Structures are given as C-alpha cells and as structure tokens.
Length: 185
Image 1: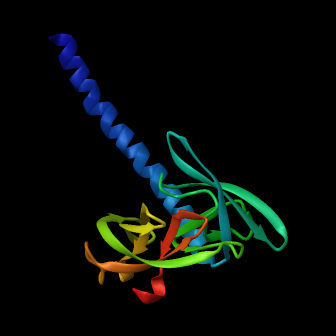
Image 2 (image 1 turned 135 degrees about the vertical axis):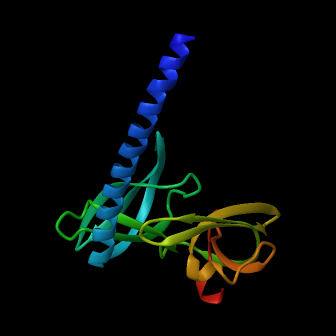
C-alpha cells in the first residue's frame, strides 16, 4: 500500500512538471512560427515525404531565389507527397519555416479536374497563430470514392455545414490529392 501511495505522490509531481515542459516548448515553437509568419517572406513548397517520428512531419522542398531548401515541418497524416502549400520562411535562415496548410496549389504539371463533394465532418481546433478547423469531404471519380480532410480557416468554415455540397479540384492522375475550391465557397 505504501508503494502505491508513493507512486501516486510521485505522479502528482511528475505530471505537472511534464505539462509545464510541454507548455513552454510549445510556446517557444509558436513564438518562432509567429515571427516567421509576420516576416511575410513566402513561397510555395512541395511535400516530398510524409513520415512519423513520435508525430507526423512533412519534408518540404522549396525554392528561394534559385536555391533549393529542404525542411521538416509538423503535419497531419492526411497530407500527401506531391502537394504544394504556402511556406513562410525566415529571410536570415530560410530553413526555418512556417507552413500554412489552408493554402494549397497544384504544380503546373498536374491535370486538374473539378467535381462536387459532400461535407462529411467538421472538427474545430485552436492554434496560437490562427483558429483552424478540419473539414472532411468525399467525392466520387471514375467509379471510386475518395475522402479528404483539409484545414480551413475560421472565416471560410462558418458558411459550411455537414451534408453541404462543395466544389473541389483534384489531380486527375492522383484523385486522393484534392482541395476545396476556396473561391466558390
């Protein structure tokens, strides 16, 4: 019984200390991201690889003034290799980046198709830099069903409900890579 009480006491010390550590590390990363974001230096970066080492990350490749950079950035499992997102970078150290996953585009070599998708889920979450939501939709192409989750800003989410039909654009050669047509929300 004494061992159990000692264990419980230790947990009352260890758990709050761990939470404080996570809080301060997160605040430091958020502060760095905010500084990069506010610098307004940006380009588009392509995801070359999505991996997992405790949490998911994407390896981005992007060009700044003719020089190619590669940087890892936290991501979610639903992002795919070959997708391009807006990448803000530190002008003094361009390998330090902040990725805006709400702004995606296809490379010029991709054959784009448009279709109507149905919203199947909306999940809210809060970030330090901006409130964000995850929106999941499904569509059918060439007899197959595709489902995609995408981050969307608070401004765009308010007009959308589960069951709504929305216009999406997708890669005709890789339909699982799709995005909302933000201009027609």
